[in-house]
Image (cartoon, rainbow, N blue to C red; front, side, top):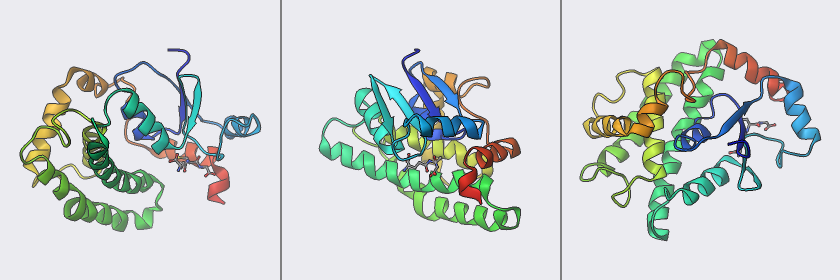
Length: 217
Ligand SMILES: N[C@@H](CCC(=O)N[C@@H](CS)C(=O)NCC(=O)O)C(=O)O
């Protein structure tokens, strides 16, 4: 869909996930000049990406973007109380995701320590909340799919890329993950060759450091 243009840096999972059920065009920044062009065009409200063009708007700030898309596609609860629960779950996931996303950018000598920190936060703080939240129901909030479920699925997949056995002591989350993967639209998104990106590698780090070189001086 040509009027939905999504610009973000390569491993911004959040925007990828909300894109799963709808066609969207992704534009990746791979050169510093492309970022500078957006800046000089005045396209970036706070001089940052992601930027999503949707419904005639240019949306900035990933949470504002997620809130809009979740609301538009009925993934944001049926009332304010459900929304508050969804926000709490989502924010807990996002805290962990932010840590995971910075892992590729940590210097080699700190990687081991950084990974242990992710593992400990995931196991002691985050995953137990979701294991409990799924104890008696298939979805986290309101007996229907919400963005909280999608965030949980993605963070578990991201964690497993770094720590393959991380879900061993979380049987409910494991079962949840299998059920989510069995949904056709999600299964399709997880197939190789889909819009979902592989784990970040050295080339990704190099690109980030070039495009956002002002942050790495
Ligand atoms: N609060 C913003 C943060 C966005 C952000 O940090 N974007 C990075 C790339 S992932 C960026 O564009 N940084 C350039 C800068 O801050 O100068 C959001 O959630 O969208």
